[in-house]
Length: 327
Image (cartoon, rainbow, N blue to C red):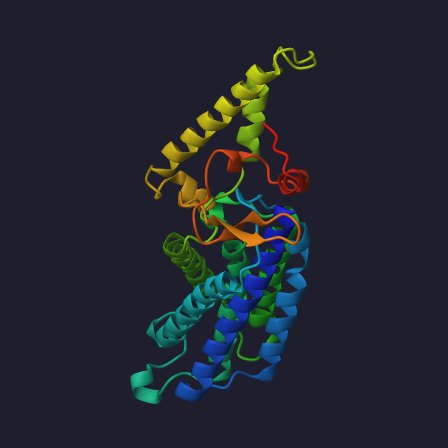
């Protein structure tokens, strides 16, 4: 369920980010530079972007280390960072086209800012490729190159970029040449790293998904190394001692978690998984209908350690509400 939530969050945040990017960029072009993009470019941009994003439903995602909760403020803030960063990068490209990025465009100091068909081809291709690349940053909990997307998502995204490139080179009037296309691809690749860096700064400041992710491979390796306990399958004869032993194990794990959280947050765990060492869950209470005050977890403050390390399953929550506890 946490992986499904991550896919939904990636899709919605990406959609908001690309909408913000395109609105900011095209609005500035029209009102500040009198460069109105042909409607055909906008239609093709939306069509390619929608079709290539379909495989995100089967994307490879990782489960967060804490239960997920829908936070509209965090979603909008995350999308704003990505969208505004991409919009600024596109404006930088537009203002630099007459500085050698695109051939055949005179300096704006002499003839004004570019508005012709050739310039619009370059604008469209840059925005199209940048929007496709943005999904790699939006879906990753840390830096995008530490989180491999599904093969289907990679293929569909790159296929969309190839189609956009071929249209700009062979289908449109005043087409781009391959050197200009290479410049646009290289520019967008550099922008992807820059936007991803801005995303990590936002995550560090806001503690967005600060608990990081569950390392399933590490857990599987630890389980394999530990092997099967010799007590497994045998009847419990000293129940109190078994309970105490389990409690000591929980305390040990809690201490390990605290020690790890004191380490520098600019470590590989943050870079690869967005783990800031500051859990984003807090415990509060409310009045139930039949059993007084009950404790729940909400976003905003660090959670208590110890018992919180257990899996928060529906069965465990039901036992808590009924007044029963388990070791």
